[in-house]
Image 1 (cartoon, rainbow, N blue to C red):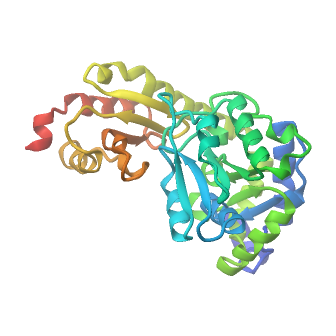
Image 2: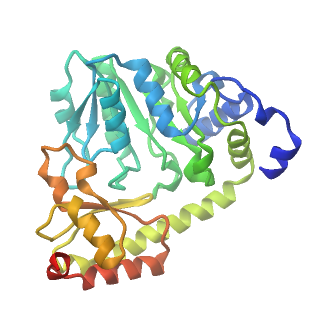
Length: 345
């Protein structure tokens, strides 16, 4: 990246609104190979991060008053963007394993529904949706003439080898499927904001109007770094995946001693663990107390559920991607030592 910054002029200039052609082509080839389907470069747009990819897609699909189904606990940025655009986020409850139910979704679809948005591996819960479940949601979307948006920001840290679903093996996938991706997590480019939309070119043309009005073009340096990563870092990324999977294993292996104190591990995967806490205190207050009393920083479940859903008051999200196995041991030690009386002191 330093060499590119110093020696190439193009990264300092405006570029194509939908991204660097060589990066679009490389991602289309990567997606085709990984999923065993067919993706053309005209079906790929590069965005300034995956959050912008979602924002562009929602803007292309929805008008004021339209609806999008979001499984709960939901990714709060997805909810916030709908609020800002005057759309309605329709909560889709999940089961005890935090898996969404297609039949429950079917009952929530109205004439104003434009999409169902899934995140797998999930943020905040970490759970991975089975391929069959994802395909059932695709069929549901197709039947109702709406879109299935699947955010795969954490695709590269899935615990399952190979493709996590078969959506792209369907030659007609563009009629109902929109995939979102982030280079940020895979290649540690979070500050350079590089994401992607994989969708029908007609929809990308609508998204282009939004992108041109907001950022004009994605970050030139970040795009070239993402391209270099796709071309050179497969082995490195495989090692990074194994490290994240080892941290997930440490989260699961160490949890029984917390379970004995009334906690419950509701989900774990990719970068996150989602837990139920035992304290007589809503999680938004508990999160503040944990910083003060135990120097633990995590997010309260109230950020991931509707206000009227009291479940979030008993839940917290732990992001373990920034702590290694010894850090996880220390986290569990601090949580185990924490008593209710300490929180109220």
